[in-house]
Image (cartoon, rainbow, N blue to C red):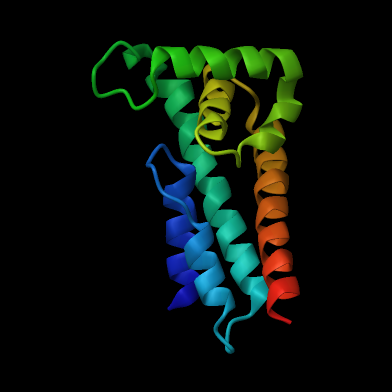
Length: 142
């Protein structure tokens, strides 16, 4: 049950919902039966798809930005837009950052960044973060 849970929580934590997936990842990494490679893969893919959700929100729902229900404030979006414009598509490598990363993914959708740039760069950044977390855990446990 750990891999689907890891995927789902990683997905949700990459969306605009305020959650983290690292604790669950480390919890499952402690299980003797857990495959760290599979855990890393499922969490990386789930987190990337969560980032893609923010991209879709930016691309199609930004017209509702003035609505009270819109999940990203105008100031957060503008901050992420300045960062994205300054560093270009390479800023997608930092979508794993808390709060700011969601904004970067959202802004990349607003600015209509092609998906073939978005997906590989977001996956690399998020997968690298999970790899570092699991590697650090491995170093501490062994």
